[in-house]
Image (tube, rainbow over all chains, first blue to last red; front, side, top):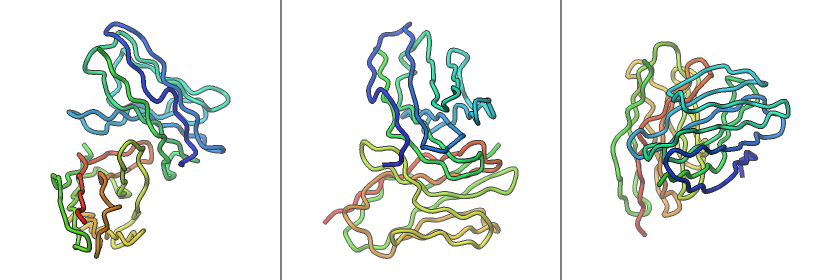
Length: 112
Length: 111
């Protein structure tokens, strides 16, 4: 158990819908990262927050957005969902931006 | 841009066989290098890491050496077990903001 929690574990929804994925980092970790794992694209970095502020953006679509709240949990919002958004979404946390990243168990999103 | 290339799988071995999974990288800066492991239905776990040239990372019998001259970080284990069956990812980080992963290599160990 890494100490990073993600909810929900599974999510099934329809095209065009909007969902919110939640991540709670390890106690004391200020950095939160989001990654997408899909069969065709592999593991791709989406976005990094540090202590509530966005630090870096990767291959994140405009339909996706994220935020980190004062209690340091983070949410990834996915809207206007398409079939191709079906993937595993991982959250990771670290004490500081250059620190070891600890991964959560992931949320499996299925878009029908 | 930064990228990681690792050998395609699946790699199928018998128990107690020697394991090598090749990994090479391209980076614009001076990266830290990592091997992560993903067991079925679970998230990624850090297996080992190396932060500078000639460093050797090791954990649970696995080893990898940071070779700057060949831009490589090959994973090795002298004697694999069935419990080592998993997906192994090589990754790099340059500025600490993100991990760049390879495609992953499936390892299957038969008893």
